[in-house]
Every structure is written in C-alpha cells, then in structure tokens.
Image (cartoon, rainbow, N blue to C red):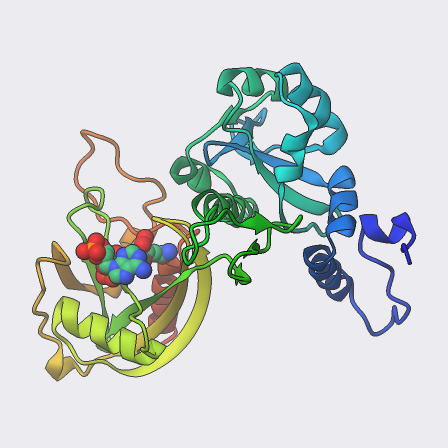
Length: 342
Ligand SMILES: NC(=O)C1=CN([C@@H]2O[C@H](COP(=O)(O)OP(=O)(O)OC[C@H]3O[C@@H](n4cnc5c(N)ncnc54)[C@H](OP(=O)(O)O)[C@@H]3O)[C@@H](O)[C@H]2O)C=CC1
Ligand SMILES: [Mg+2]
C-alpha cells in the first residue's frame, strides 16, 4: 500500500517524541530513502541539490569575500537544466548525501555534460576544484562537499560489473549499484589509512613527502594492507618510514579524506622511548622526518595560511580540516597541561 506522500518528503515525526531525537528520525529517514526508490524520488523533488561539474563543486562568494556551498531545489533546477538543453532525466542522476538538520534531504548531481560557464551564469556561482574548495569552505560544508564528490566519483568509475563487464544499475538514492547478470551488489568503497602522531614524551615526530608544498610537515600516514589490523598497519608504517618501533597506541578520531580518492583516516597517538628515538628515514617514502619541540609546534600552529612565493621559509602544518591538525593540537594541549605524551 502507498504511504502518504507527506511521510516521504521529510523525516517522519516520531510517535515517541520524548525518547527519540531529531537525529534518530533523520538517520532513519535517510536509511529509508536508501531502501525505497519511490520515497527517494519524492524526497528529491523537495530536497537540496548540490551541483558539481566534472567533480568540481559549485560555490558562491559571499559579501564578506568568503565561500559557501550553493544548493538548489528541484524546482529551481528543472528550468535551468531545460534552458541548457537537458531533458528531465538528468535530475534523476542525483545521489543522496544525507539529511540536513532542517530535515531536508540533500543530494549531489554532476552536470559535467552541460556547458560549465552557462551553468555558472544561470546558477550564480563558480565550479571550484575540490582541492581548493575543500579548504575554502568552513565547518560542516567541507566534509559535505567531499562526501558528495566521493559518491559521484564512485558512480562514474563503477558503471560496469568487474565480474561480467555488464553495465551496473544504481538505486534511486545512489547508495549502491547492482549487476543483474551476476547478482552482485556494489557499495561505495573507502581505503582505510592510519595516521599517527608519535611522541617521545617531550617532542613529536613529523615528516614531509617531496611532493608537499615547501615548509609543510604532517603526521605519518599510510594505507592499511589487506588483512592487517589498524595497530599492525600503524606499527608497520612507522617502522617502514622512520625505522622506529612504537608502543602505547591510543585512538584519537577519524575522518573521511577525499584526496587522492576516498580514504577513511583513523588517527592515533603513539609513543617511543626517548632512548630509542633515533629516526632512520626511508627516502623513497619521505623527503624528511624529524622531532619537533612544543615551542616549534606552537609557532607552526600559528601559521594560518601557506606561505606565498617569495615569503621567508616557515614551518606550517595541515589546516584544521585535516585530522593531522587535530592530532598535533591534542599533543600540544597535553604537553602544555604537563602530561607526559599521549
Ligand atoms: N587528513 C589528514 O590529516 C592527512 C591525510 N593524509 C592522506 O593519507 C593518505 C596516505 O598517506 P601516504 O603517506 O601517502 O600513504 P603511504 O605511506 O601508504 O604511501 C602512499 C603509497 O602507498 C601505495 N598504496 C597502497 N595502498 C594504496 C591505496 N589503497 N590507495 C592509494 N595508494 C596506495 C601507493 O604506492 P604506489 O603509488 O607505488 O602504488 C601510494 O603512493 C594520503 O592520501 C594523504 O592524502 C596524509 C596526511 C594527513
Ligand atoms: Mg606515508
């Protein structure tokens, strides 16, 4: 039996309002849209759609010169797509990202087949490369755009079944693709990466790859191998990259990282004894790795933007968007409050 449309367009009001939060309703709503194509198609008509062009998100410049995402409703977007010569089917390629705190379903859509400048003019924004956009956006907007781009990229690169070579079909939400020849369901994939800030009690260890911009140092990171636990991957990466054996591993936090593709970054602290802290860098992986004192880290954390060409050399760290920054800030806070490492 068809459910009333009212229920399909936004999270249902929970009958147990006193024990069920808005968060729970939103999560259940998103889950339902992933499972019910009709409900998802209805929610799209009432949702917010974030546009991308060839995987670059559409941003708007505010009066204060900052940038923000630009979302359109289906009714705003339909006439624009029509003006640009696209039929109504393009909108259906939207992929569900989630549900806003205002209870609106959120979608992303790549309009790469349309003329970029014409879409920008009609929508009053600019398509910005994700590497730039990610760092221009503030707060929750950066991860939202990163998630949208990751989902769109996954759909673009998984159009065919790897077993049969036949085209795969997506569900309306875009939460999976299905090959009817092999009955295989494909889900969006992330690569697990461990990132670790190693401390010797009074100093922390940072490294830089030759490809990093001048003066940028970060925590050590590496992709997990098949079959490894996180702890094994962490110990192996530190051993490979800087020749140290770490102990006292503790979890800090995690994040989705869109570069180079979707990585699931798991951030940890670890320690080495000060008597076993001599680094032996593998130069095929890192250009340099060295210990930094709290004073050096405090100075580096104050550098808020990458140095410009011609500026004097300065050590700087990944920005607050990056979980590496969180690890380094946590370590510095612990040091300032007199604790001995992580
Ligand atoms: N958010 C944050 O704060 C930070 C994020 N990072 C991210 O962590 C990631 C990993 O760090 P990095 O030191 O480069 O990793 P690694 O030390 O593991 O070295 C990268 C190399 O590992 C190989 N590799 C193995 N598995 C994969 C895979 N699934 N995907 C891609 N490459 C793989 C590749 O080698 P080959 O090319 O030879 O095949 C690649 O060049 C990077 O993508 C980086 O952007 C890093 C620091 C901070
Ligand atoms: Mg590495």
